[in-house]
View 1: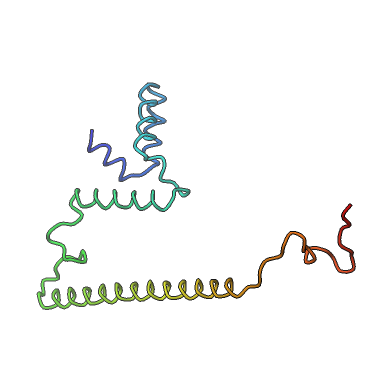
View 2 (view 1 turned 90 degrees about the vertical axis):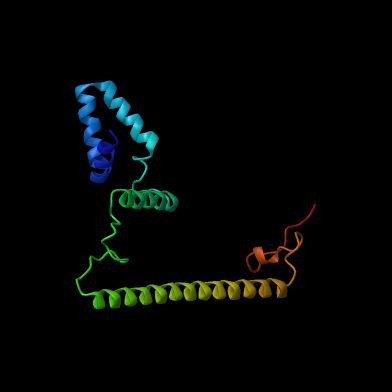
Length: 156
């Protein structure tokens, strides 16, 4: 049963929907059970409108399944490449890929620091403008709201 669920997960949502429709046609309680399973397991909630957290959770589940099913076999190198047969080339490739991953991580860190500095600068500017702003209008002083040439409302 577990293997069938994994196979249907590999095929995606259309396979689950097809199984559900066929089950409803053949024996409606089975179709209802499959529908309940799809809703309960969250397999129907991974559409285009799902939030980032849902998508990240789905991607993590897929990565876990990939590892369980042997997607990360020992014969594969760190980057997922099979050995070329030339150990010197394989070592060179691994070193180059590691260097590129390190540079990518450093660049991401740099961008994060840059965004943080920009946010901090914008916030400091906002606070300085707010601090130097004159006191807000009082309820009696509503001249900024009246069109030019009109007189203030008369109090009775």
